[in-house]
Image (cartoon, rainbow, N blue to C red; front, side, top):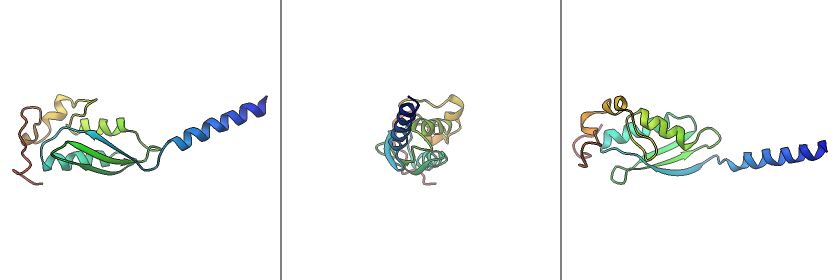
Length: 120
């Protein structure tokens, strides 16, 4: 009986270990408007341990990530993004975090594209 329990436990552990990917690609929508937003979003994403690559596309608002699932998960990245003042589909930045972004980066107030106005 003990041997069977040990075998089952090892099988479950092995399955869980191999289910996590070292270099998983994923995308998520992140609100923003310009080059300053792009820099802030990418910096916030890369500050999360386990994020290896972050690229935010201004026109589509898509953030492309490569993460190590053994060290992080998408919700940790989203939490860092909202702390930097940028909304995701699942989480919204607090008023304080949103108010901390540059005035031209206020994406909630209008739908204009200010990407040509400034480059940081």
